[in-house]
Image (cartoon, rainbow, N blue to C red; front, side, top):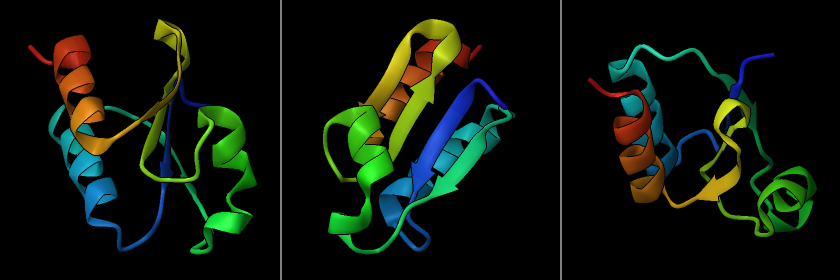
Length: 82
């Protein structure tokens, strides 16, 4: 399993923003697609305490459920950018 995990909803523009940054930085990650219905997103809720996506997990750096695309993009740039 990759140390980076992205909880994603296909077609979500906020998720796409994070995936673009992951690709730009050439980072390997595991993508977990969540159901459309918030009430069915139990896995992402257990990880992050909420049902919105995207959510990033970076086990190597102690990030166990970071929400909000702008925060995730900023984190990835600071942690993995040049």
